[in-house]
Image (cartoon, rainbow, N blue to C red; front, side, top):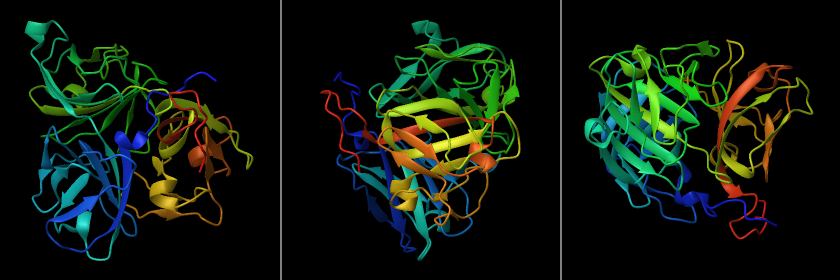
Length: 356
């Protein structure tokens, strides 16, 4: 059997974490994956109550917080995330991240290598950028100042991006997503229930290359004079998968092939409006198959529990849908997704991984 993945241990680059808050400043939280991992991007949500989705990264600075469920600008909160550690992170006593007896989940990615790009000197892109990247995992965090006009931005990776999520840091506006299944002429908004939107100005009607992504005069992606942040993902076989699927409206639902058993699955109806974004992840939410719990990045709602009528199974090589819910399996409806692995289906030596 041919080798399938170059990442035999996904926990070296992505991990989930669950904890119960204690309202104690300086609480260190430790990952429990096979590998130690110092995160560069942490996404946190209170599970058993309403609360914002908090996003933190090492490029903007550990105390800088954005929320996927609002259009709000970046805030500085010293009592929230306090440090990125060699195998986890430290939290303060802010209720959004460490309230007493509250249950939390975080999804955590590693970038790792810093870069600065003076576009006029390197001739890579036309807009200066800086950030952190990890070519092995296909993930980078990119900071730049908007110009309000067409340009290209170095993303730090050596392969074309499948997903870009952009937010303005110092002004109020939507979260904007590029997804390779939609192409450079469309966008989605992470903070809304809206469908895909035709736009020539968000990505300049251009898909990313192996070195840069494009922007134009859309304020959501390139507001003139504003600080912008972009989370960039390139697909890595056996570790990450970014694609689309069509629902069949049947309890014997669509099978979504990923090439691995997922630890994280984000999806959204793209062909029509009115559905929430959904995050599924059995290692972080449900505890075991079938998958009966989800969180919603565009709202503050608590975790939805559907254990009696589960949504899906996470299989050794993908996701099998089990319900007719139009949020994720409407007949003839198109959905986009991003997924990260718990286990590869086939290891780098060609040996089938053990399904759990």
